[in-house]
Amino acid sequence: MSERIELDITLPKETRYLGLVGQIGESMARALERFSGDREELAYHINLVLTEAMANAIKHADQPTSTEVRITITLARHKLTIRVYDQGQGFDLHTVSPPDTASLQERGRGIFIIRAIMDRVSYRKLKSGHVLEMEKTLH
Image 1 (cartoon, rainbow, N blue to C red):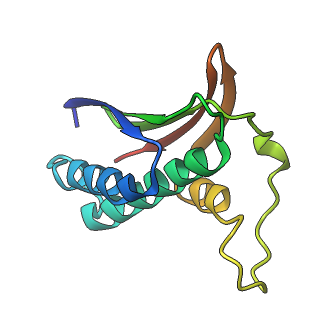
Image 2 (image 1 turned 120 degrees about the vertical axis):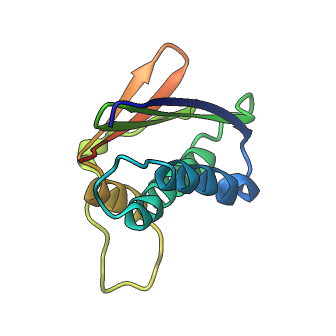
Image 3 (image 1 turned 180 degrees about the horizontal axis):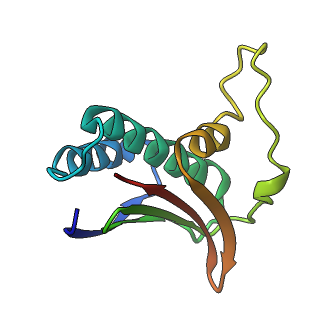
């Protein structure tokens, strides 16, 4: 897989755009002709991590001056990298505990799902906010 794809998406910080960003990720996955794995499963996974990460950025990046969510998706060689930028107060990724599976609440499952799907997940502070970076090796 030698093709390189780079997308830089800036959307209003509104949940109504979750489906759009998920569809963009799905379409990209389905277009990877040289990917030897299950493209439908990859499309579903990319949609899921994109919408979970964007929903978290919308919900937790509640700075009054923050009106947009920026997402970059890069496919280079055999690595997919997704970055979701926010201007919230941030959190410690290492202290996020697994969700209570006995509970019917849907809260607290996003980071758990992202970690289960992606090979590497990090969250770090930038000059103007934070970035959640997710990587997946594709074969």
